[in-house]
Image 1 (tube, helix red, strand yellow):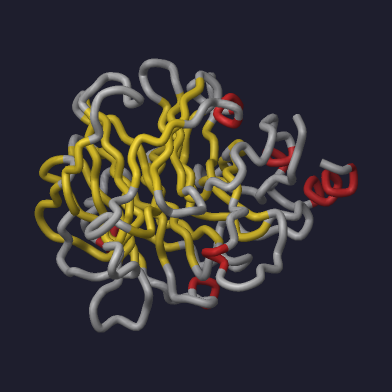
Image 2 (image 1 turned 90 degrees about the vertical axis):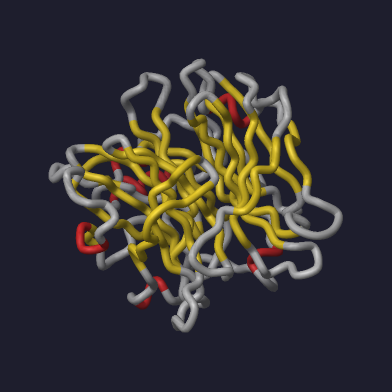
Length: 333
């Protein structure tokens, strides 16, 4: 970070924790929609979207910074024809009931925008070994554009949150929530938690997508990404009381302004599709996301490969809500 950039960043309100980030960024170049799972074996497991949209990759490290130089394995490739043959997007890796699961989006090779959510399972204790079995498509209420699934547990129940287009709605995607019968099957009602309504959610496309959940201070926070995937991409936030019924949309309060946006001061643009993890101390919360180091893009942003994975400390306001700060500048720490 240059002295000028550091000074500009320090001058921004509520971002001291970002300025003091000790991570070297970008963490992994040309890896978008990053997901990091810290496992009980002491390792961080990393997966993300590759710009060729043709495979699922996996890295492992005992430190967050080590993910950047860790070896990368291809654990699954797209099909040559038929289902799961195109647009392999936004994988997430989770460990559930003794098995590994990867949730990802894909489309048939012959109809590349008919994107749906799919699941892989590996029962080997080591996800780099064993076999990744295709458990099939997660069936939602409609056969429409759907992606960005994430799963979490709360008060003994497992949930899936994801983005999907609702028929007859004037948007691209909203964020939905359902309970799960098992890691690849939904059960019960599916409720809409947020749909694009504010101007900052509707630039280029009307998008709410990429949900991620963190539970702290007696509340459940669900972040999501909004607008097109250029420099307008940003994060919004929903908040629910931990004792409330998460399946009741009225339990959730939506922040009227984005909580994480592009920064001219640090030269980072389109921050989004985040997840949350913790530092090696097991206590410090860490924000994981992607961003570009430039604002202007030629052609379709989806064809630009330079959405890089980034990490920085997640702060907390005095009222117990997350302080995302601003995306940190490139560094060589």
